[in-house]
Length: 106
Image (cartoon, rainbow, N blue to C red):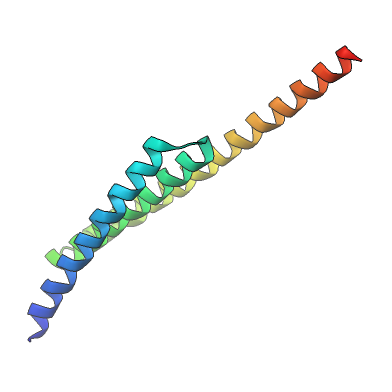
């Protein structure tokens, strides 16, 4: 088996595995059950998309795709941090609301 044939086979296998991961992440986003589960699924989805772009870059030899994958990774990281901050603030407001409701009852 020559190097080109092996690279072709390896990229096909990588694309197949990334497709399975894409479906699993999509199911996690759809089924939930909680908001943090969905955020984690979205993070996995963007990571899989970055993997797709990387494999396509290797397969085509067009290395501009690597720059696109890096940019996508940076945006995905910022989105994950923003979602995590939103979830923390939402939980803090819920705890604050339940503490205030407990004080009015007593």
